[in-house]
Length: 321
Length: 297
Image 1: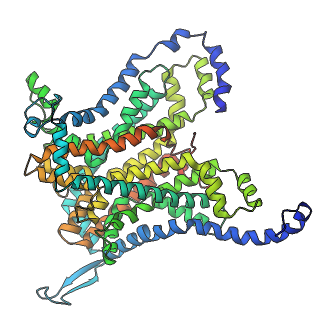
Image 2 (image 1 turned 90 degrees about the horizontal axis):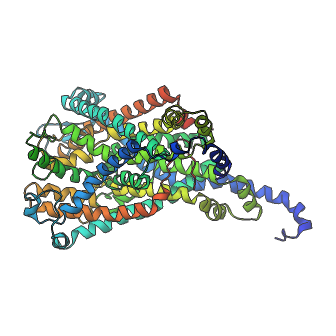
Image 3 (image 1 turned 135 degrees about the horizontal axis):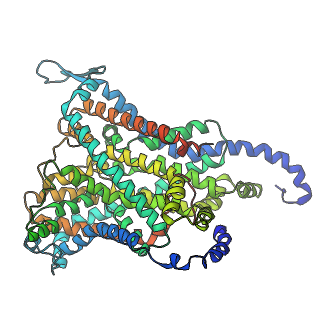
């Protein structure tokens, strides 16, 4: 093509625009193709399959021996009623509910406090504190549980050593009453830094003229923090809350890792542990699927409700012009 | 940033009004930060000390009293079943490195398409992705396992790698970064110059989205590195394990043979080092603005 010759440019324009729209209409689909393929294979299909399985069950004829003795049949809502009636499931939901109540407010409260302190003018040791508090995010939950697990063991723990020196009876943190605190502490340790960084980033994005005026009017750092900074980072807090809630419902690695160190954590301590046990030690994938679907629906419902109530969905819809 | 240059004169005017108030450090505030830092460093400090102890010192000497057996412990760990531990380390690097890299590419392409092209079904795709963000990923692990078992892919590298490649949240972030950092005029200019759509993306959009993509990569990398349930379910052969599953298994053995504990502790320390190093070098990229979605680089 001789399109580069300037006098001709005007003539060739229509020809090009003729061609370009077709190229450009295909482009977004090409760019999206890998993501959508993987989305379909590893998100949509498993969800569909889990739903399907949750409505199926195995019917055993006779002794259950030989081909055709075990057939998969439609089960209706049987798996669901069984899952929801199961005292073990309800107990695991109760434990994780308590775990979430302990963890989420503490973690987000501390994350907000640390972020505000990092953003405040008069605090010192900021670089050191920021890096140190964020560091646990780089430690996998399994490793974190392992480290804390040893710190909880009376024979290893420095806390028990100190209590012993003072002559007090130390509380047994891995006892059945307190183990939920032990697990919540691991979640707090691993999560507070990440949430702090999210909130801190939002704080850094606030143009400082916004509170310069308030400062000139004599507002203290505390008033500036509570009246100006907190309301502005509220959308970030909403999202960190949401992600923390989702993570709470999925707690699995921490209790699984602590199990060898104590006999107070059952195989059904958290809902996902029960799903795992049903699917892999009991070979009952149908009720495991039903329980998974219940957990997924609960997550969705909670997230949706939360976004509606707190923000009217602002955090997300703001973006989806 | 333009905001700083704008506000600087204001600050200078304000300074003489209350100079000592600005300067005096807040003892309480700093103390709270330092206590938080100490709490976060405590287990890391402990693992450093504990991995220098021999098996019987672990349970008999004061927790924070270091010893001299670090190298012995590392040697013992390395000797465990012909260096299985180091194989776990390599596996983890493979899962997280390759998985994270490919996942960022896929997310960047999708996010760019969603931010920069008008096309039919765009709203539907975006809503799907948003719904995907809220899907509890771990709940997917069991049906994913069953599906991969159907095609005999469980207990292979693929079974951990493939499900890690799709990240709705990564796509969501990339869409925000593309919208915020790639001007339409630049894309138009490239197209007018005859650049193909792919070339426009790879030569213009990707460099502009750079800092954001680094954040997404770190997200994915750490996410895969930390993942436990997926490999735990998918893999039976311990030569394919990542560190998390491998160390969990070692700890389980420790319950019956406590001498294993030194290896578990040394293994934990060595597993923290690479990620902590990556973290400290790249931490300036961690500017995660979830809500406003803007990246300031």
